[in-house]
Image (tube, rainbow, N blue to C red; front, top):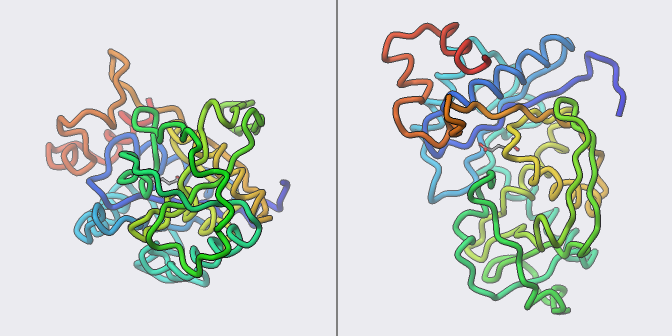
Length: 282
Ligand code: GLU
C-alpha cells in the first residue's frame, strides 16, 4: 500500500499487565522514529483488554515511562483524538460488531473444548507461550447463527489447513506461514466474554486508520493470523515492520528476564533515558 508520507499513522500498543521492559523501549522507539521520519502521526493505544491481568497503575506507569524515554504521540487515552476511545476496555462495541460480521459470514464457530490456553488469548502470544494448534473437534459445528452474543463459549476462526500466508515485512523481509501447521483455528473471543487479542488489534488498527504496524518479532505469527482476520472482515491491510528482539549475551530474550530490566528499574538505578535507549537499540 503506498501512501503520501504525511498520511502515515503508526501506533504504540502496550498492554498494562506489567512494567514496560527494555524490549518495549526498542519497539516503541523504532515506532516513534518511523512516524517522525515520515512526518506522520503516532497513536497510543492502551491494550487493557483482559480485565484479569490489566491494572490502571501499569497503564499510568507505561505512559510515564514512554514520556521519560522521550516518545511523544498525538492521540491516546491521555490526550484524546478523533478515534477515541483509545483504551481497549472501552471499545467492546467495535469488537462485537466484528464478531457479528465473522459469525454472519460463517468464518467462526463456537467451541466448547476446555483449553488451558484460554487464559492467554486476550494477551499477545509471543514465541514461548503461543496458543497450541487446535485439534479441530468443534470446527464442523454449524450452529454459529443461533448465538446472538458471543458469551458462554469460545469462538475460533476456521483456518484453511495447508493455506500459505505470506507477507513482506519492511524490516525482516519475506515471511511465510502455513495455517494448520504454524497455528490452528485460533481464538477470537473467549468464553468468559473477553475478545481475543487477535481480533481486538485488527479491529482497532483499522478503526484508528493505522497504516503501519511496528511490533516485536515475537508477534510475526500473530501477524499471519491477523491477515486472515483482515481478509475475512474485508479490511485494508497495513504495512508491517517487526523489530528484532533484544537479547542478552547468552541469547535470552531480555523481556523474559525478571532482573530489573524494566525501564523504570533502569531509570531508578540512575541510568539516563539515552543510556536506556542505547542498551535497547544496540
Ligand atoms: N499489546 C501487545 C503487547 O503488548 C502488542 C500489540 C501489537 O503490537 O499488536 O505485546
